[in-house]
Image: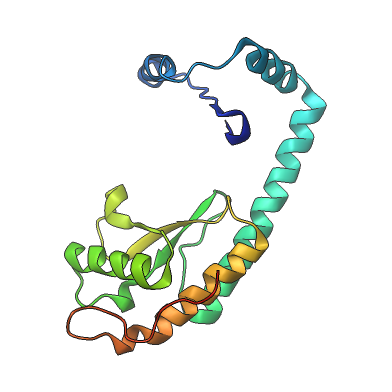
Length: 175
């Protein structure tokens, strides 16, 4: 569970390796006593936790549906999932060839031309080139709309890539 506004994350695990490594890393980012006390009281409040989990689940589901349905309208499919904060997006059709080098080239084009930072699957040991991970949980509805518009512009322009791998006329004007 993460609390970015507090600069705090919580790891709960029965795996000794995970706990020991988290303990070692925790010395690099100490949390104030006041923050620890506040979060402890908040996490002990069963009513708050139930409401938080219910609301968070509802918001994530809504954002997931909005984002993935927007991608489907563009012609991009995602792996089906039932939970999470990101989705796996199939951009294999945009690759010049089915290689990890082509995936990295496509990733750079997306960053430079669409101005979106998505993560290539190879960063997560995905065995097949062309799959990308896009986090949708940390953006608001307006940003989802902007991202979808930029993806649409990029996909539309993809057939118009010059020999240097630069998309012609695909600069993104939207914020």
